[in-house]
Length: 361
Ligand code: SF4
Ligand code: SF4
Ligand code: SF4
Image (cartoon, rainbow, N blue to C red; front, side, top):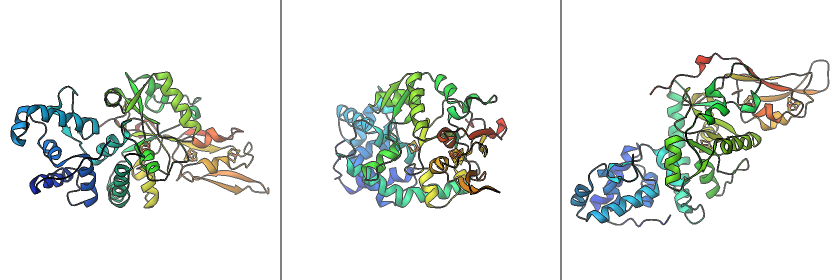
């Protein structure tokens, strides 16, 4: 993606503030720089006027309709505007929120983390300095976590009471279409020199309309259900945490993230500001349990647990250390279960079905 040049008269420059205000960052110099990178002043004017008929847009900006159409095409391919129908860009709108602009402008295959490093640096600077602290403060004030953990399906294969919305196989098989796209948290961190040591970035699974949108924008690769389940297997092997919206909806609106606590825009800032994970992400209905008669004290589970919920403790009457789960901290992700070779760990169902709320809309 080539950087756009930001030059124009003062009123056009001010349109950036109008757009930034829609995302709650009117006075942010950092956010303005991102918008200036993504749009020329004239494109910003166009975006601020949307949705509006092509002819009216052309009239308001004093340019011809062909120019309006080509500029809107450019903005669509950059991930700045979102149409219901890509054939009809006059009905498009500016990104609804920071998160949408963040994800869509950095996930496309047309964006290159080396060539377009400046874009990733601008986003990273804004996220670290402004967005992460703001997000954490708002999660801390919120009443219900926005996300939830979906347990590793291979850790609950024997559970008799598993719900469809917590069974990765059911979630994947219920989708009409599926795509994988870049996890923009990892892609951004990698571009600024903090490569994720847990995983590559092609692990974000999207469903139905979102999948088709990403494929049409050259930002996603179509997956069959079998492909998606194979990817889920890889993610579980890598010790990633399945995270989606906190509801029983089978096609999660933000897709199925496969996160680590180092890069993720949710887990990493929560750690950084020492706010409990449950302020933003609900535990699964399960908790880890150790059979200390089987545990050999190898410590693999403690090394892999993303939430530092496992300690090695001396057992009574023995010099051996065994794993012990801190149930306050355990999020029920199942990562430890899959890493315990002797199968001393298991997930136990401890919460009722109502723990996972119905979708609000
Ligand atoms: S939330 Fe997790 S998987 Fe999703 S983009 Fe961020 S790190 Fe990647
Ligand atoms: S991985 Fe299993 S055997 Fe090793 S310490 Fe943990 S519970 Fe014990
Ligand atoms: S102990 Fe850690 S790895 Fe195991 S389920 Fe709980 S949070 Fe996940």
